[in-house]
Image 1 (tube, rainbow, N blue to C red):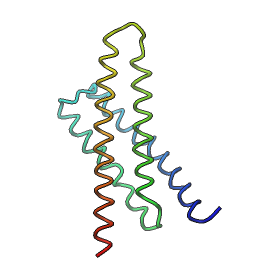
Image 2: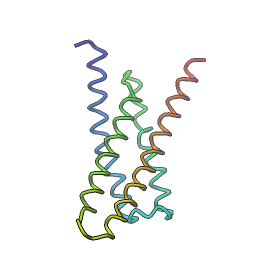
Image 3: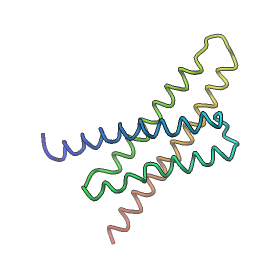
Image 4: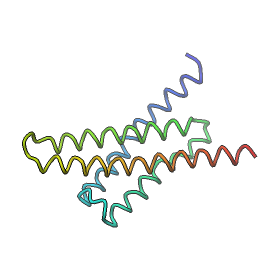
Length: 132
C-alpha cells in the first residue's frame, strides 16, 4: 500500500471519528431546540455546524487531506442524524410522526449542507491564496 493510500485511509478514519463527534454535538443541540428551524437556537446550530469542520484545519501541518476529512465528517454526521430521525419517528400508523420526520430531515439537511458549503468555500479560498 502506497503512502498516499495510507494517508487517505487514515484521513477517512479520522473523518469517521470526527463525524460521530459532530453528530453528537449537532443532535444534542437540535434536540434541545426541538428541531425548530424558526428559532434563534437553530441559527446557533447552523453557526456551530459550519465551524466544527473548520476546527480540523490544524491537521494541514501534518499534510493530512483535510478536505477529505471534513467531507467524510459531514457525511457521517448527516447519515447518523438521518438514521436517528428515522428511528425516532418510525411509528407506523401515527401520522404526526411523519410530519416530524420531514422536519428532522429538513433541519438536518440544512445544517449539514451549510457545513459542507462552508468547508468547500474555505478549501477553495485556501487553494486560491496558496496558489498566489
